[in-house]
Every structure is written in structure tokens, then in C-alpha cells.
Amino acid sequence: MKVKKLTKPSFPRSFGAYSPTGHVVTAFTTDADAEKARQTLLRNGFGEEEVTHYSKDEVLFEFVRSENQAINPILFGQEAARFEEYLELAGQGCGFLVVHTPEDEVAKRAVHIVKPFGLKFAEKYTRWTLRELTYPSPSV
Image (cartoon, rainbow, N blue to C red; front, side):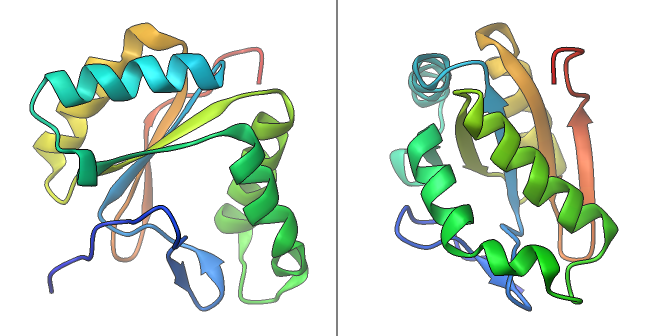
């Protein structure tokens, strides 16, 4: 099954929950750090259509708009916890990148490239699971 690349206007969902399958979601200390990381990924072989920067305001808007998902019974444990973590980080001013990485090696390479830019966490969404690629910093 080919996974569709994420486009800015669409936050992919599965059963109503945010689910960017085939992508790595990363959070950075600031929007500026996220943009620096995006530019570095572009200089290192990733295409414009593969790397999407979401500002803290865009993340807050998207998740607050669908806040009722937090009480949806289909959102179980890990998904609900991630929903709350993304909201908290956005509220702290963090910027986010979503990187199309269908292969594990591409995901690892992307995370390695962006680590120096205030990376708070990186998670890879696969078809059935969510894998942490880095752990949250102690300040989260």
C-alpha cells in the first residue's frame, strides 16, 4: 500500500484521530528552530513536498478545532497522550515538522539531521503503531 505524502492543508486521520502514517513527526523548541531544521533537510536531499513545517499556531488551531477527539472512545492511550503532548508543546511555543519517511532508514536519517536544532522528540507513525525515535527532553 502506497502511503500518501502529507500536504499542509490536510492533517491525516484514522478513525477521526491524527495519524500521519509513513511520516515522522518532530517537535522543536521554537518555530524558528523547526524552520532551520526544515531548511537543513531540504539541503540534504529531502524534497519540499516531503517536509512540512507547522507553526505552533497551526498545531493549536488544528487540534483545538478537533478537541472533541480527546474524549472520543476510539482514541486510546497512546493516541490521547500524544494529542495532549502536541497541544502542550505548541502552547509552549514549539514548532513542528512532519517528514515523509516511508522507509525506516530514511526516518533515522531525517532524525539524525535535525537533532542539533532543539529537537524535543521524533516519532514515526507506521500503519499500526507509533514508534518513538527520540525521547522527550526533561523540560517537557
